[in-house]
Length: 589
Image (spheres, rainbow, N blue to C red):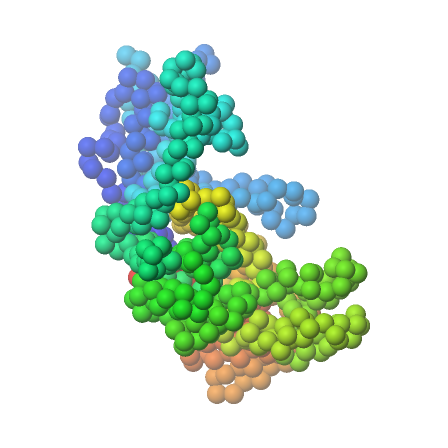
């Protein structure tokens, strides 16, 4: 099973790359020197979509190359000494497997006239090829262009940590007397430019958005001005953001964090989680205030941008006006509060003696993050309130009254609610926006930083797509389920799935089993916890569910389901256990 250049899975063991005949090697081709051979084969590989590795060679008198092999980088297999994933003495993380036994190669030999001739060429590969839009990620093709090298050198020598606006660009222009101005001249120019932007900032910003829309009809933006002509609302979402929403709109985060720009406007981004567990951008806005009407305008505009499709779940900070607007504009959407924000605010809401009390923090985290049932949460909460004398804490009392809106034990029926436990995902979204938004920035300055940051975020996704499609995770067990998971899931999701596979192998045991009309009910214990889990497996409909609810909350088959599937002699995960949004092909079809 391999990925074709269009990204679709197909069963085929021998693939010939698609390439212009004029670019292909052929037996008998002659080259002036060995360097020309390498350059030719790498150019051919780039057009086809594979990476080149230089292989064996034979030297005459340790100087002249007699013959040499150039091969696909996925030739051969990883050596046994690198496969010890269970070896506790290993300190370095095991890298993804790139080799899969591909035989594609050329061999050149030196002729009597000192030129080199291709004597052997194997064209076919046993794996898919890198699509054209990701060929720049092929290792043998990666190199700095002549245009990029001076820029990199400039940043290294000029120290990008300081303000570039107030430093003559000595490196780009040569000596300082070639710049044509002094440092003071640059300071004055920058001051005049900032003054102009401050006065005309909103007009320039909106004009940029208008230009974007004229250049690309899929770019959406809308804005609103007050009676004095001042910008009060603006929202935008480009084509990629709107397409991402189609695939990943099941869990939406609206992180209106009160981060202001130079004009006192609130930055309000919409984000989600992609198939690599990365933060993904859907759209953003600036609001002049936090009135119910402003939030209502924003949510209505967001809906128009997304073709009227409401998110299944929206997660926000605690805000009554925002809550009212969501209830009015998005009545079919489940609204939940950010659990991690609640935990972050808690230290400032309790007595100083508890703020740095490790026992209090541990018990509260276990209560909020670890409770699986309503009874478990409420019992732990009441115990904490009693043990630490917090009966008179008004803030905690109000949070408890609103517990159904932020505690996961009350959200077991909400699709993918378990993602909200991930602190890494939440911090990733925050750090992305924090790098280009602050109170000193004008709208125009923000836009320049925003576009660059968004491009970086999307490049990270592209890199992850490339890695998942063209490398293989290291397997730990001989289970067919694990191997199938490595084929269908992205690497990031597979790592989570692999943890469940290993736990099923090492910790889970069947304690009881009953079967009625094709439905098997299995009680599983022996896990890290002292709880007995119940799995129902319907062999007719090929569906499974477990009382631990991991699949419902995270979308990954739990260790208990995996053990039952394994005992049922399955070597592949049923389609009901593989969510489309976690697959390598999440954006195909």
